[in-house]
Length: 105
Image (cartoon, rainbow, N blue to C red; front, side, top):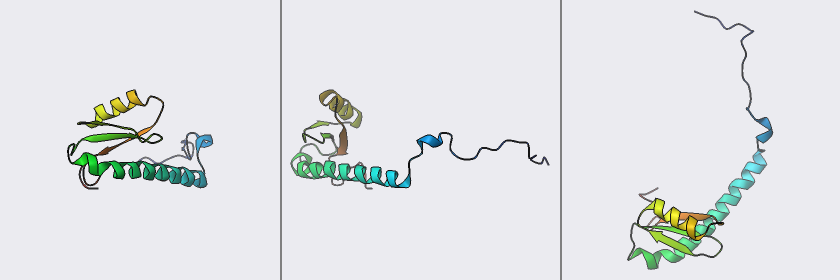
């Protein structure tokens, strides 16, 4: 059995401690993300009843500021269409079903 000698180096802490965020900053970022998601979700809930009857199971990519959207049968093409249509804006993708996701969460 080999023993550790006191000369063997040990790594402690983070690799980049200057990039560590404070717990307050992490909480603020999480709250901002949740608020943004709720805005996306509100737009999705408004659009879903009209679109679900004809496009059940398809994917909808929503741009937040305008409320504009694109629809595709698969998720990746929906992302691609959204990036082409809204090149400088974020978007969120939902599935057009009862839950907004594939399967039940």
